[in-house]
Length: 142
Image (cartoon, one colour):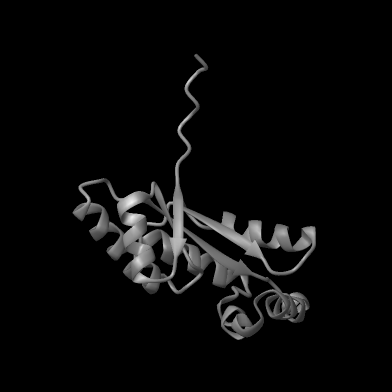
């Protein structure tokens, strides 16, 4: 017999009540869309209620944020959103964190609603952009 493979946690995401309930019933983690922290909190309440109804522990909460720090990358970030998201680009452009303060405030707010981990997605290329994002994120108290 071969050794038993390690357990691979299942993380589900989505942006609807049915997706939230599914995550609560089945998942080890829930990945919230890059929406305002109040919406993340509301979604997670549905996830937790579904988990309780299924008599299981609530899944861990994860979130993501689009980031493009600096006026020098604003146009590039908007073009990237448009080329990737098409009809949804205007919405995505509106949720991009565009300053270090935006990143810090968003991370603090997400921490308050119970997010365990956050993925910061750069919307502009270059190692300088990654450095800016990391510098902003590292200023948040864990």
